[in-house]
Image (cartoon, rainbow, N blue to C red):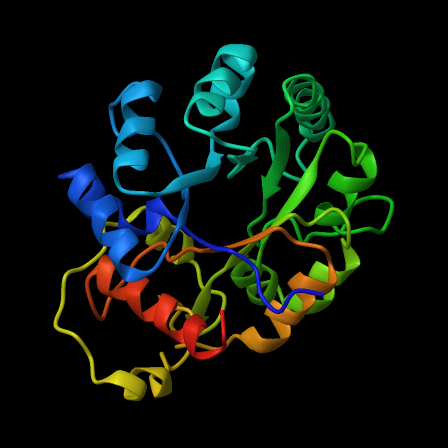
Length: 284
């Protein structure tokens, strides 16, 4: 068995820089030590231009977060756009209220996801679903919404993109969930945090990354939020990443992806560098 996996960066993590200067941001991402990226949008460029920007920076896109509404509205055209930039995977990143486990339309939503997955298959693309914590409510059959999704849709049409932060926020062991989906977990999201489940968590997902002074090395890992939820670079929060990484290998993952939705203590690029350096310290 190999000792590690390729490490990608979800570009949403550094969106504040990418929106201003995509080329310079991609070059910095490469310089930091990432060879692969996962994108969330194309920053106003057409797929051909975006692909060129990646290639010029010696980066490869392994996957893309694509809103479900875009995939429903133009399934084939949307998939083709992300094939053009080199993606092997397309991930549904989020379900809005009214579409989630426990909502009346949930099974209809799953039918649509299944149909999207079938078309992805026909184009040699793998459809993933990226979880949050709201999937961990109990369904009428007694299962969690997370597990209900993957029992409802055939594994040929949908695989997991387990977000380890949200699994732990929901009160579960990320490593155990990765192993539970062995053979169905090709891409794993590495995300760290401090604090506990709070009402404002999702506000932090879409907030702009703060630009602040660099904190003092390892001391940042000791920071606690006294119950307040906050994202942190990988290795600087509550997560047990050695166990998560071992589980990813055991489950047959092909990539791990660093994602940090917002950064309070340093710039988003500095946070991405901290995450990469931590993983390197583990031999990744």
